[in-house]
Length: 276
Length: 342
Ligand code: SF4
Ligand code: SF4
Ligand code: FES
Image (cartoon, rainbow over all chains, first blue to last red; front, side, top):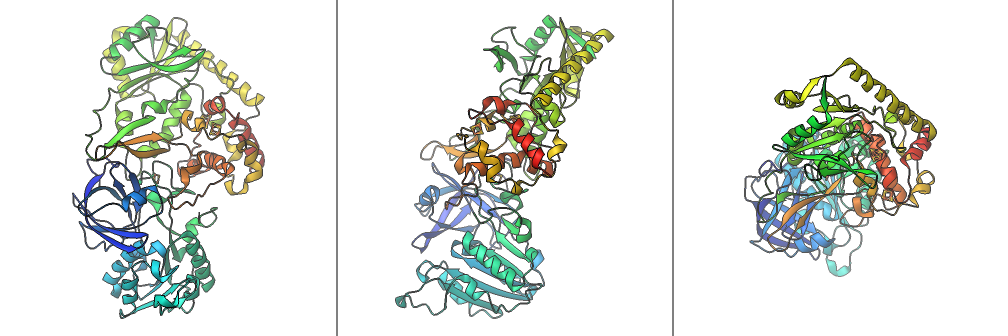
């Protein structure tokens, strides 16, 4: 969706709501000035006047068009300024860009979704898409991990998923204090990747989270017997243009912005330092 | 083929200023630089060698406003198209790479496309070779064979003229009285000059033992690590000059300029040798060491582009050799690469 046929032009967008999720994470509910829709896993470039742009994958359900939510962790200069945005402010968006999750590939299959940290944002959008097509999936399991219960993004909602019929959910934190009231698993995300209710020989896995978590989750899944071309990863790269021209996000012969940001592990295998 | 006398070409260029911003190479301190015409008069040099500035500056500016930000008004009206003259074969080849980047895929770049559609390219044969020229190692002859509107081959008192596009033919037709048919002896002179310059480039290739492009085909970047790259990378000062002068380097950065609600979105050339080029907001950097970034530059040109486009993204123009303060020499890097490729 281009503004005036110009892929660099922003579309003015109103901030409808700001939700504080954790001490370092906020969600913005946005309404673009022109009709807008996206596919789950695609990303947008969000800009704030006088600050600049940064890429985010919406965390909302793509079935609801014309509005979207982005969930943003404060990690640097741009995100710090984005965290200062208030209700009714005007921001800019470009996009959506990228290929997103190959939802059709998952039809009729067993799927395990593994999320961690801020990776719950894209993953929540994917899960909403799956909820909307649950009869098309043979099996759906969700595994989620965070450092502590305090920074567990979407904690209430994810705990609520445990009650969803047909959905197999396990959650974990690296560390929990007694006062946190945490009744789920304690340990790294890899500790909840055993006993998966799927046949790893032909099941699919989608992994999204901090690089170190993706690395270990991928290694564990492959050890459990998942095929390399059945493991999908979200690659965080430095992006500027979003359209495969500026050269920043190159990964081997791919550009994360246009060929990704979701890649199959076999597409990346053989490249160096993919987790950085 | 036609012939145009020196003074008639001057008339032609002057007439072209009605529709184009005409640019001509002129000598400053012994080197050719792109300058505006007619300011500065007739002391331009269309033949000889490539200019210091790569041809990309006429299609993809070093710094330009690409969009309205938050209310600073739309981008300025398109500039007068450029008529670029004296462009050499190496730079014409570089446009294949730039075209692939900016014109293919789901999104085309509207600024590049406009310049590509409206600019007029009057190229010229090289009549000399710099000692850094090695185009023929990359499969480029030192005379234009395609991708020009009009090509000029220097004679003693004028130029042999060849048209390469409908646009070029129209320019000749509209100015018919300035041209005469080329005579066979002039065409023969053109062939002789071309052969002479080819042999000069061949001398460079032999002297610096530069491999041919097939010699490093299929090299695996992953097999070339610290020991291979650091001997050069340790001297790199991350100035980005190699990227700036390179006709095929296309990387850029978008940023918003201005304060408060009045901002415009700018695009500037970027450099992959600079530390933060690939660093993500969270701090992770896939190429923290200089040797990794130097390898990345070669990987992009000699592995990525061969795989996605089928050509090396280097034209052998030698600009990066002349520009590098650390004296990193692509000729010797390619030599070592070819020697270790298989
Ligand atoms: S890499 Fe160097 S020699 Fe090759 S096209 Fe670029 S500037 Fe010219
Ligand atoms: S021109 Fe030389 S010193 Fe400058 S960035 Fe390139 S390789 Fe490094
Ligand atoms: S963000 Fe510019 S090429 Fe991917």
